[in-house]
Image (cartoon, rainbow, N blue to C red):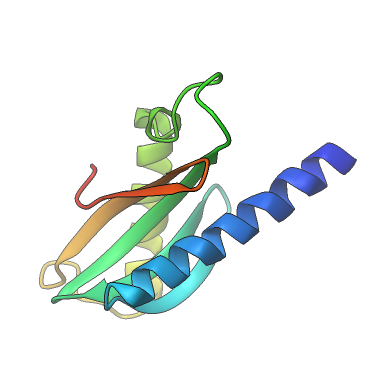
Length: 118
């Protein structure tokens, strides 16, 4: 249980680092840790006319794979479904809202941001 708590604590710290990175890039962060019954979106933000759903993945090193490898098809589907729920619950016109799915990968202390990752 302690290990699980520690992983969550570390994850939240890196999500805050990603949030600060996005703000420096001019993004408006609307929400962090949006939860649905089956998934979570780490960061929801706006930039240049897009509503952006952002997954943040941290890896200390690549021994267990890089951060981007962790966002597999199944994880992408969960994020898409959570985004759809967010849009519907918050009154967005799905046909008229420009959305994007980004991934921020943090390896050690290096941040890489892939816009439109999936």
